[in-house]
Image (cartoon, rainbow, N blue to C red; front, side, top):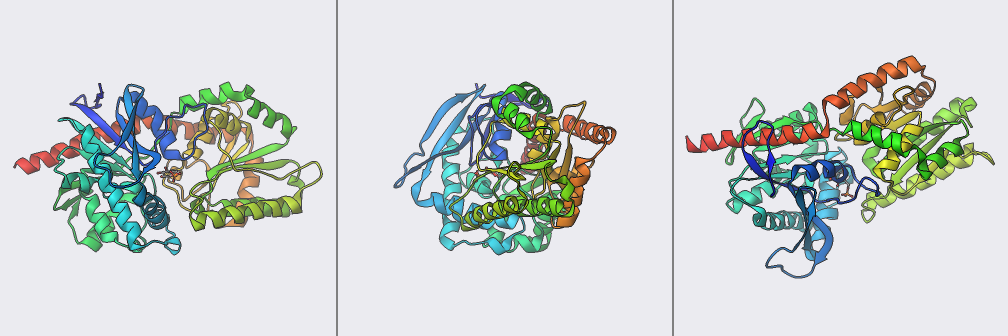
Length: 478
Ligand code: G6P
């Protein structure tokens, strides 16, 4: 029953999708993290098996990996209990304290150990063993994100010759920065076991290829790397959303209590909205400083606009994240203390998540969406904000030029998040933009969103994986 048909009309494949975090939340439940929320609706429809961590740990050596399996749409969700001895080292110690900071060009925040790296490799090999359970003759594996750079190589070491693809949801930094990750060489060498490596932008793919060429001394031609594993094709697949679904959510949820209460509380005042995980890559401090700067420079804006910042807490056991949570709480209270009035609070700061349906309604209530990461693979909030707007009176997106989404959404107001004054001015410009200009910019962005949906991203990747593997097969048989 685990069958999807690739768009090329070619083979029927059993697709196995792997990501650290999985989700079974419906659109009406709160979600955290872009990846799992974005994948759920497409994976569900595809009939794939989605394998990830259950969030539960098991002590001691496991002879057989334990997976709880439940139906998910036309396919299934398999949630693995991970080895207790290695989970922390893998998730906090290496994936999120060595790879995540480096991938977001923050090597100054790398804090890791040899043991953490060992645990990362152990969990990658644990997943590989678990995946053998789901292998059928025509299975294709699609591995997601930086938690599993070495999973393809582990599968190959177990004798798996099936198609294995990998997609990176984050940026890939320049060569010298990736070189700051302990064991960077082994990791990239392991990645070359994939038939297909997908990136969000041309810049990410080019950075990766220049590392492979210059640091590993391997031959790269036409985006394909030759290594001892054969050919690894590197290509760009910008992830999208389902814009029609978001528009429908936004229209439908205007009467939801959270949305109608927000609207009533504004009393005609304008609203800017930000929605992020509390993460140093998201540029939250800069954004709040820019809002502060705008109110100082243009005091007439006081009482006529406020900022709703939804900031879900994440990875709180890691020092850099705990520090940022404290810094933001202090900064927000400082700005509110200086600019606030008895009946007006400049920043509404919420450390909780909302469902996609409610979020869509909140986006539509806001005249300005502020998405200002210092580095971001794509940033789906930017796309969701646009899709949720009212077509006859759309809001304005203020978008960092360092988000992958800026490549497509180039009619947003693009900002440099390091230029606080520039951002302050741009938010003010967004607030007073005439309807005609707002409509033109919004239409152009919607055209892009409709041209690159999440459904297309999914089938384009699976198709390309099919083709990349077929080429490797032919070469092996030559
Ligand atoms: C980013 C990563 C995902 C991750 C998500 C949430 O979007 O690319 O792989 O799942 O953040 O982070 P968390 O650590 O809570 O899973």
